Image (tube, rainbow, N blue to C red; front, side):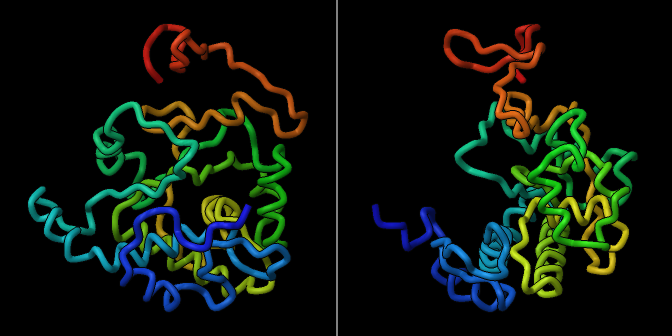
Length: 247
């Protein structure tokens, strides 16, 4: 089977033209993964999103004006594709994020991968954060895992996140970084603040916007398939809580 040599979704031609200018010089713009390549993020989606946002800036300003908001206050979502399901408009509950006093001046929100699991207890996340060496001390690994399958942010916050990721990639140019590792670096390490990431709030697993369920069904350390007590799968395969309400 021949590998796909083009992006599998609609990307404005102009965005692809400027993508090369926005990428760190040690990251390839090719959608084909080259085994053994030194450097580069595990995924290009953040830089691709930045290229798209720059191209779509005028449209975003127009739509934001219609909603009586400035573009900087408009929320956007960076998401995985094949393993994400929407049960409702995610931006309705997400709008409350900016009003929550507990979130301070946060402009980017990520969500806990598991209600209890710590970075140090997960081999993959430990491996990704260990790449930062002394900049990610042992105490930082005691933090909860921030999953990057869903990232919500203001336009300004999201762009600043990508800019900080670019700066980190350039600083660790000989290391093949993972995007989730970079975000956990920003969330949990004081040393990461010198790359000036936006204010990122790690939302608790019990929230009304996003629920990451992968590690609830699968233990990566033992390969054991598990079923949480508060989840069931009905005859029509809809996942629901045992109180019958949708997740």
